[in-house]
Amino acid sequence: MATKIIVPQLGNEATEAEITEWVAAVGDQVQSAEIILVISTTKAALEIEAPCNGTLSEICLGEGELTEAGDVVGMIE
Image 1: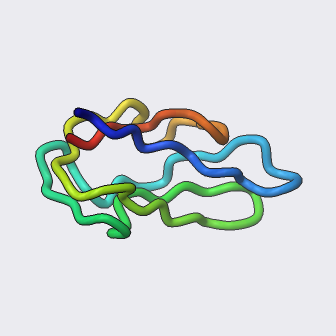
Image 2: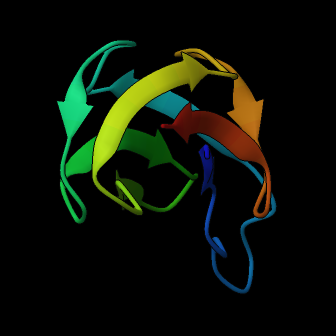
């Protein structure tokens, strides 16, 4: 069963963020709490951790794309 990688709450003032870097690539094995993605708001860069152990099976939004809190940006199987 796939687990969604969801953008967390970005803060009181930030409504969107840009995907800066995918540290992991599709097919990579990832561990829970491992940094797999970096997103940036106008105020800060945020490191997003894998929510579980597994294989990064899908990247829904690529580097340079905008996202909001609650968006699904990838999947881990």
